[in-house]
Length: 301
Image (tube, rainbow, N blue to C red):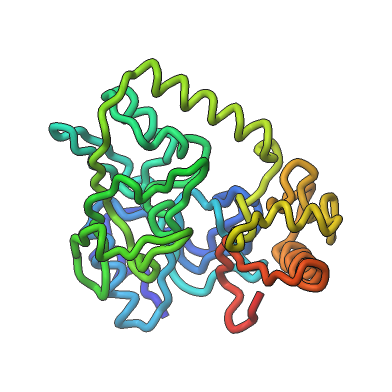
């Protein structure tokens, strides 16, 4: 059991009890977190992580709340949000330092203003730098990790600086899960500000035309199978518009599930099961989740 009085002795940031998480997620779905904390610096993170470890309390890090499905029962443990203390950006002679709490759109704007390219395609992804690195988010041929050189994390209760190779980045994965990402260092190619701005604008328009950005969602639900597209498989199986409760397979992009009114996490889970079963039976393909379920315990999705 956590003692708030004890935490306040070692923690400078904000602490909330029984915090509803739905409003912090792009899906607008999820129960309450036992403890929701907003650390102000690396020492705050170290202190809260080590305190939780001694008390055997689970710790979860949440960025912008995209690419996650939080259970209706919420999260038993501590949820860390880094946007308050880690929203900084700086350019050090062509090397971009970004706090983990920086939104990707802000990172892209900053880089373009300083005439650096390579990240324009990330502008429309509703994620923070930390969350995007953990899953190596990407689109339109680019990934968050493309120009990363180092990542600073809290791992096993210690502050560590990992070289890119140590992060084992791959398609929608890394070995950063289980750590708390604090900062990333990027080395980007120089570019023309106007050209970079135009490319960002074109890709944002493309995203807005092809994805249901106007309805709450968590991004792509499934990873693309090898040599195929999850959206194409789902659409070919006649699942566009399929519903369960208030969760629906998007009519705009079949690899998105949208919250059309007041969907619950259980609505989404049941719809995921329907999609997987149908695609397996009709196309012979086992779809793998890209969205990260949190708070479901031993119940597999």
